[in-house]
Image (cartoon, rainbow, N blue to C red; front, side, top):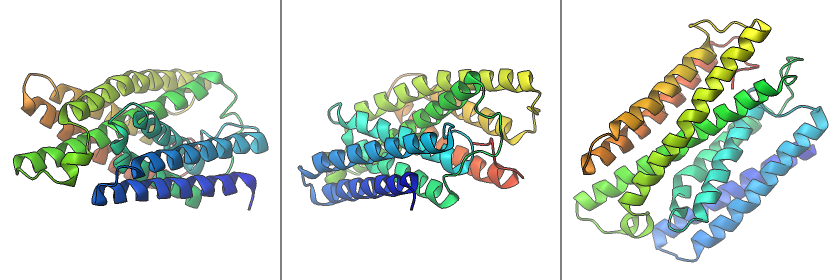
Length: 274
């Protein structure tokens, strides 16, 4: 087993352990386990970063093109976002959603294979690299908004039913979840918008097909629409605004994932499609 794959598996194991510790902490109200989960998450992020560095060193290109490498980078960004939230106070429990997502992305990347891109010029332009990195940052922002929205809806339902159990004790307050979800959308939207503009400019420069029916274009537009819809749902005042925003974030994330799977299946040659 080569170094990249070994480190990738180690990172996946750390993510799985962190997710398990957070799950046990929720079920048993164990206060010390979240700290241990954060330590495991930090170990996973370190191993994951080292795996991608080893990939770059071995193949002489950044892991930004192809299903395996691109999903691995996205998994790292999601895990890193979860780690940062865990260090900011009572936002660590978002790892209950974010860490399993990162683990799932890393697992799919491992199954797909961490192989170099088939396209020779894919990494020859810094604008292309910036386009991909910004796009992944945008998708990571949507993932954080999804996690905050899902936890908001679960806790809102518990409070509405006057059930003050483990969810009420372990989850961040509703206001905190709403604020995290809104900020994640506000940060992710400009990242994705600039990424799409750079992608269009890069494609025009090298004469690539960026017509309206191109799967990459369709997925980008769908994702951008989800961002706009989730932010628009938060317009107004009162609890209904926050509930609508959380719901649209969760449903929108599901739409983006479903669109990715369908468009990926329709793509004859996957290289270049994140």
